[in-house]
Amino acid sequence: MDKNNIQETRLSADILIVGGGIAGLTAAVAAKEKNPDAKVLVIEKQTAGYGGKANKGGGVLQWFDPQMKADDFLQYHTPAVACYLGNQNVTKKYIEMNNDMIERLDRWGVTIPKFKIPTGPMTFMVGIDLDNCLKMRNTAKKLGVEIVNKVTISDLLTDGDKIAGAVGYSIVDGTFYVVEAKTVILATGSQNYRIQPMWSCGRGDAIAAAYRAGAEMRNCEFGNFSQLYKKNTLQEWVFCENNMFNALGENVTQNFRRFPEADISATAIREWYEQMSMGKGPIHLVMEGRQGGLSAWDRPYGVPFWDADHGKAEGRDPELEMCPGFIGEQSPLNVDENMESTIKGLYGAGDVSYCGSGASGAVPAPPGRNRGSGILNAVYAGILAGEHSAEAVKEAEAPKACEGQIAKYKEEAFAPLFKEEGYRAIDLIDAVQKVVGPVEYSVYMSEYRINIALRKLEKAKAMVGNLKANDLHGVLECHEAEAMLLCAEMMFKAALMRKESRGWFLREDYPVMDNENWLKWIIVKNENGEMTLSTKDIPIDTYPVGLPRF
Amino acid sequence: MIFQNHTIEFDPTNCVGCKMCYQACFIDVIQWDAENKRPVFKYMNECEHCNYCEVSCKKGCIKVIVNWESQRFIQSFDMYK
Ligand SMILES: Cc1cc2nc3c(=O)[nH]c(=O)nc-3n(C[C@H](O)[C@H](O)[C@H](O)COP(=O)(O)OP(=O)(O)OC[C@H]3O[C@@H](n4cnc5c(N)ncnc54)[C@H](O)[C@@H]3O)c2cc1C
Ligand code: SF4
Ligand code: SF4
Image (cartoon, rainbow over all chains, first blue to last red; front, side):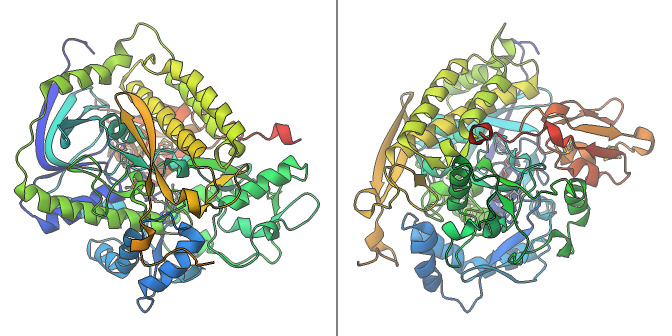
């Protein structure tokens, strides 16, 4: 590529949707159904319909019995899962829309096998076929949504406190894209540190773009999802935490789970760590008396995928050893109940803003502690963001993108390609992975260990702005690596501030939930290049479920 | 887990150049050779063995061979021994 002769394409849209996973495609369809005249453009880094995570293997949706009252679920969920940290209005609406969302998916062509399996108190799951995003893409196209693939959005354009569009580049031929838009919906997924295979598309570069543009982040300290895997193959192990045994043959699940509760808990990870550090590891699954789960082979869909995925791993974990794999799921874009961020006209839908929306309280992004809520949360937020922006663009004036911003972002986008020398993206990724990977840093935290983590990140920061790439794939990798470091920094800084334990968030040095001082959201923001942290009181008195009175 | 060592066995005999495998890759491991209408498995050390290229190819041209030993948990096992 010639530095002085970069091809440029200018596009405009009423609604620009970044990311063609389930959230983005839902937003596109919902927007078009609400306002057929709106020009809706989806820009996807890889290929819409295949990108993202909704097709990577789970294949289930959370389902609520229509007889159940949302308030009854909130009574259980607020103390037990959300630990009072959620925006209960968001959770309530999500529950109320459950059956309607499943019907809409059906209508949009997605196959929903309707077996019903209980997964926790008051919730069940039904199926969803793995080609869901392909079906959504076809529906979107039929409605006139335009889709551009293999273009990655690198920065957001703003006009004062309003969004004006976005810029990015083709990872195939390096064309620079400028898109002016009245509203932008980020549907780019969470940030996942590239540690666990199926989750590795979550790279956080759009979270970083929103942060640079001044959007607030919320609940960053909950971007530390981890679950137990089979040790040799890194295969997911649904429900294994119900049957954890140490090397002495003791059932250690009993140490943290004494009565039935939502599964997938950070306390299982803490138990693993404690047993291991007492020298009582390794931890195994003992099949005897194992609570029933859904076996992959019982599902009459996605069969070629599961045959390949499970088939290749079969027999490779004969000793049934389990250990925690850190995932992350940093999903902090702070959005209101319409999924609008603190930048006017910039929305967040799906895993990019799961924690940031307060959807589920003191848990990381889906599944958090609600199996099958990832896809439905993306659908939920996609519908709200899509419909709300479809209304908003009717009134909005054409945006005015600033040429100065565009020129600056263009230079920054390709900078790694024109560096004579520099660090490799892999070196930065490796440094960050080593900090977040061990769960005693990222899941079972303490001030001492958080400070070590922050010092290591500070050292790694020397590489930021000094990465070199050899081709466009590498350029993208450089931006993603820098975003990864930013996400880790937000997580550890917010974690250091929260001096309590709450739900998924566990501090060894502050083991108790402190409602007196910490019924607060931590807000992270970029102010003139500085990362600032502040708190916002949770308006618990305005929500259906208040604090317990004892 | 970036930089593992999985491989792909590609048998072009029945390949019809339909591009499905290229589109199916969610992290840009596969590039497209437009001239020869063939996939290029270019960044294999980033492949996460999601198997989508394999299951998307209707002509059975692709087999993803997982190198299980090259995967690593980024976890501090040794300090517990
Ligand atoms: C193995 C696995 C199993 C799961 N099982 C289930 C399940 O059974 N049920 C359930 O409900 N949930 C499940 N989940 C979670 C669920 O898949 C996610 O919550 C959901 O897919 C999130 O959708 P999304 O559209 O918000 O994000 P994603 O699916 O991550 O999509 C984001 C899209 O944005 C694109 N993108 C990112 N950055 C940019 C950029 N800068 N420019 C342009 N495009 C960009 C990406 O390429 C991607 O296509 C599972 C997840 C995994 C990994
Ligand atoms: S297995 Fe998945 S990640 Fe690897 S090349 Fe195929 S599609 Fe890409
Ligand atoms: S999917 Fe199969 S047939 Fe189609 S281009 Fe790829 S290898 Fe060739």
